[in-house]
Length: 65
Image (cartoon, rainbow, N blue to C red; front, side, top):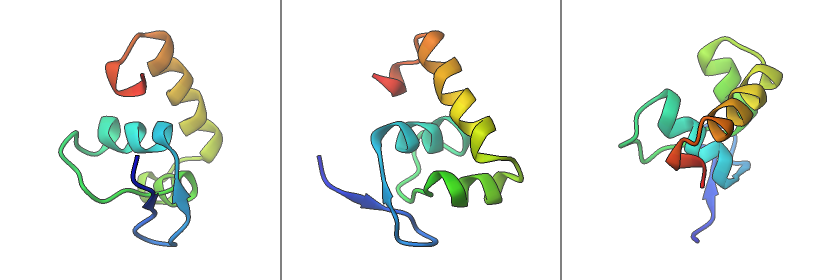
């Protein structure tokens, strides 16, 4: 898998964070935010986003496989 960096800060973005970007922004997005920048963009906390990742995995969302 190609390494993807955050559009705002340049940090490396992992596969769960890519999936979360697709789930919360658009499944067609080609630009991704790291958890910290995504939290700022969505006006929430990193902890809340981490909880969402776990929730979507438990629900069986195919983006998080």
